[in-house]
Amino acid sequence: MMQPTSDVFSVLPLFSANYNAKERTIVNQGGTSSGKTYSIMQVFFLLAMRESLQVLTVVGQDVPNLKKGSYRDAKKILHDSPTLQQWFPVINEGERLIKCINGSIIEFTSFKDEQDAKNGKRDYLFLNEANGIPYGIYWQLAIRTRKKVFIDYNPTARFWVHKKVLGRADVRLIISDHRRNYFLTEEEHERIEGIEDRELWKVYARGLTGMIEGLVFTNWDIVDTLPPESEWKMSCFGLDFGFSNDPSALEHVVEAHGELWIDEKLYSTGLTNPDIADRAKEQGLTREHQIIADCAEPKSIRELQAEGLWVTACSKGSDSIIVGLDILKRYRIHVTRRSTGLIENFESYQWAKDRDGQTTNKPEDRNNHGIDAIRYVALEKLMLRGKKKGVKRRN
Image (cartoon, rainbow, N blue to C red; front, side, top):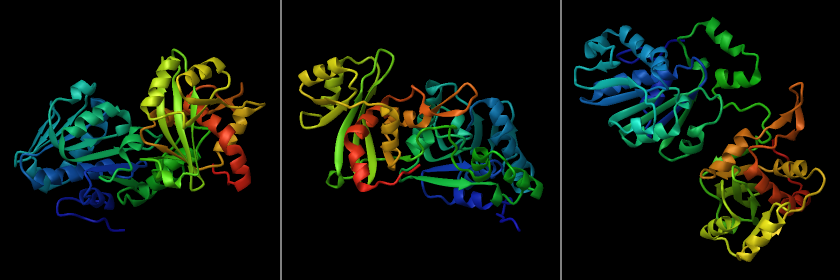
């Protein structure tokens, strides 16, 4: 197949998708050898040529990663294009700067922390292999970027891009894989396509988000808000009490359209029962809002009741954990973007393994405080509803 071309260099369709994107933030999620980094660097060269005195910043996890990735790609693009060599006659290897004759510069750098990232402003930003860069650094850089932000990564697991960036109106997601990289040889395509591990194949051959092996929940996603209250069929709150080092979790569980929607009200360590009561009231909870709490904490429940909250104990029988999880797995679950504690639970709550490393049918007793809170609601409010409605299991 013939490669698409520009007047400056040969390009892939991925180049055009990035160059023509109207959104402020362009997220490139791709498998190995999809051409995402190479294409974004081509975009940066044309952006630098298009307007004078532009600052284009390429950020990596550290300098060695930059030199093996985006900086190496940039030098190859420049080497292969006589036109670019006329426009960019100077490379400062010491500072990793590529200078355009119109005064624009492409700089390659890394930042050690958020404070370091506060230095300087730019017109365009590219976070290369963003899953190796902390969210705080991204935020400081993005807020100091005047025009557009480009992000790329291999989706080995969900991280801050999935939680805090995707899904917004001014963000475009581009998923790519090796099949549309016409510069690869047939042997390279076959090697990638022949990855035997199914989870690795999904990530590296198709650019799809991977996940930790053995997760209890896969039937969930992230949304911005709960549906309108007029659409709610059930509304209740679940509470799991924490300790000095374990968080207390208060989760609002709503049933609407045959699915569950959850908004986190509290997820914090070191809280006393009066603290929990104050936080709940700050979130608008009154005697009219039922909170179902861990029945193993009767004293705490009585203290919250004395604070003017409607708190009841959950029922726990034999295998209540498995029963509660089974109920939750019958539903599609939507978690609001601000529910960071619960999101971390869903991303890391795993089935336990036996001595031989085989997955069991019991979950690990960790990363579960938010999940325990919604499980209490499931046991009290959803068990009979699910049976009566015949809700389908969704894994």
